Length: 352
Ligand code: NAD
Ligand code: IPM
Ligand code: MN
Image (cartoon, rainbow, N blue to C red; front, side, top):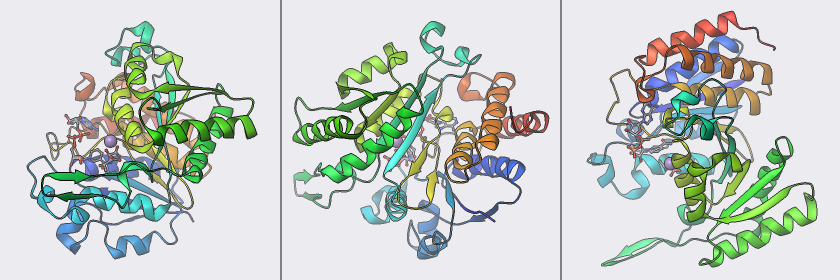
């Protein structure tokens, strides 16, 4: 019986995770869901944003379904020593799971172009996969400190770190249109020079069927909204991927439509890319689509149940057409939307 750890976290995390868990129970009734603490709430309860009992529970888990962590800008959590802050709990979780490749699909489903603020002809048919390196770069380097009026963070990558995430991007592109854009800042940064060299060398050595090109991150920030259809798979380092994926959320129409799967050494981690949305938390109006779509990615990547994953994706698309949430200009609250997804699941076959 597959075991899934749910980590609802802070803010809207519990609201959207409850919706995703309901959907999982519906399409995979044999799966065990076990809830644990992470983030600011975990710090309050256990003095640690990634408590030992949560870490222990991961040992025999098949996958992890995460909500969101973190507080508002004025939250007292932001004044804690950095290692005790909610976001540090999430980073420690990613590290513990060895999830180095973060897949962030950006898709405009047929019939949902109207949810995008872009012109329909630009939004139509967009299907991009951002592969964000998740365990390296400036996020994780040990050389970081504030000394008086000077602060340091170091961006560092090694060839093995670049190659393992590039492999995932090439593998994904091989199941798609076979095009990979590697995004860097090689005109300025040595790290990017190494990144570009290693991605190209791996392509030339082992993935010759892939069409690989290299673009600068500033230019991609413009082109991804001006002409999103030019991209198939984008592979990039941790910080660039973080920023570009929030930007790309404009294309489908909301951060609430951006799921993710983080894959690597062990159990996969599945989470919406949005944050804890303190401005709407506790009101029952968050869009749970990204969390539900993350559950679909869990079904696909960790449980190897593509039919169930497709069924959930279709149900979400239908619910978005009929009951758009407020972030998309609609009226539906979290429960109304979730009920619409569950209804669509009842009426749509598992295969097809
Ligand atoms: P955010 O993503 O929480 O919110 C940005 C805007 O998008 C807000 O207006 C919010 O209401 C809206 N929004 C986000 N998700 C939504 C949803 N599902 N439905 C409807 N509206 C949605 O970003 P922020 O405000 O910069 O960050 C808030 C907190 O979240 C911070 O503490 C930050 O560190 C944390 N954060 C956590 C994660 C994570 O847990 N993976 C990701 C990003 C930010
Ligand atoms: C994300 C978030 C996290 C990140 C934060 C909360 C640590 O922004 O998942 O995109 O920067 O990776
Ligand atoms: Mn982010």
